Structure formats: C-alpha cells, structure tokens
View 1: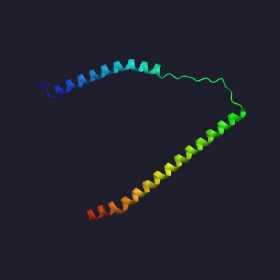
View 2: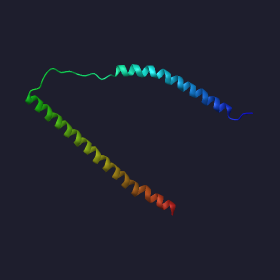
View 3: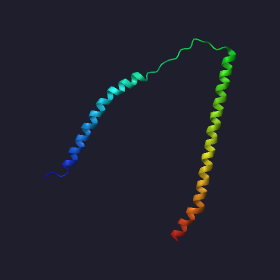
View 4: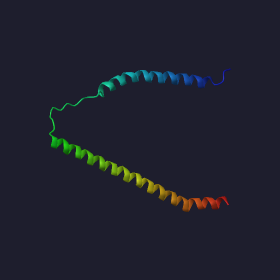
Length: 101
C-alpha cells in the first residue's frame, strides 16, 4: 500500500504538461523577436541652428512640466497619507485603546 501515490502521479502529469507548454512557447518567442526588432529611423533633413534651439527649448520646458507634475503628485500623496494617519489616530486608535482597557 503506497500512501500519496495519487498526489505524486498528479504532480508528475502536471510537470509533463507544463514542459509541453514551454516547448511550444519557444516557437512563439522566435516570432515575437522578429516582430519586435528595433528599427532605425533615418532623417536626411538637417535642422538649422534656430530650429534646433527651439527644439531644445521645447524639450526643456516639457521636462520642467513633467518634473513639476511629479513633485506635485509626490506632495499630494504625502498630504493624503498624513490626513489618513490623523483620521486613524483620532478615531480608530482611541477606540482600540478603550477596547483594550
């Protein structure tokens, strides 16, 4: 009498099934690599000094706007966290302390 043989059989079948799935996946990975190969964009047009300066300034402004958004959301998340902690302290913490006494 062998105890647990059903569990071992199921484990063995599951391993075989998973192995079969992995073998099929390698074919997909090759197709995926072909589909997602990096493509290089070529541009024969050269920018003048004024256009390149305008482009650089626009990129800097966009970076500043993005940084401001990140800082705003950072402080907003800190404010929300502080408010939640204060609410917890005022309500739930007092109830828990009273309950434990």
